[in-house]
Image 1 (cartoon, rainbow, N blue to C red):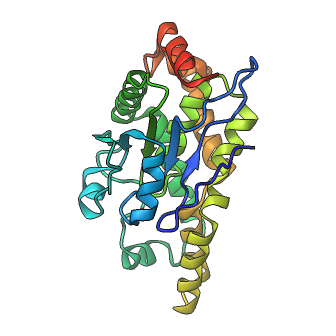
Image 2: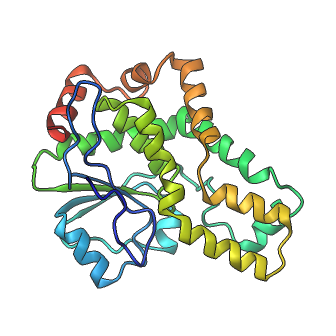
Length: 262
């Protein structure tokens, strides 16, 4: 049984993608693909764990401002690659609490609505599409079996979540399993989210603000549904999206499967 959530004390939502079964009976290799939240607070012990995976590349999906505010602590064996899915963060992950309070204190559904807007943009924004293509170009270069690729954003849930969604689809993992992996963020980030909710409750924050903040910090099936509906309306299917929007050829798909599957 693969241990899906990594024991990282100074971070949250650090996960192993290895072990998932594909539709044709193959298995994702372990210690080859890691999806995580940001690496800014890692302790030497945490870095040692990532180094044990022999991380060869750290793909940072955050915007320029996010990277500058909280730079990565990069594993010693890894090359750092900046692949900003958004030019400016739209996930509210770096917005100040005062700004969020002003925006959402009387708007309990505001956080959910913002995230659904984000997922539309993740799929159809021209810059985002270009950056996800760059993400795959890096993955296609990582052919050595003794190396891992790590990709992340700030919370490891939206930009990273869609990167994992595209990748697992390319690797032929069943849709229910991909959705299960997507929703695992809520378990992997449970303590992180609970601490934030407790702090807001201690400050007597409005129920609307607390509800919207929770929506911004977690994932919902509705968010992924927004992405998949946008894909189906404009490209017909996820596989067609991979081929036409992200420009993954059949050769690319075969190479990804040869690299990352047993």
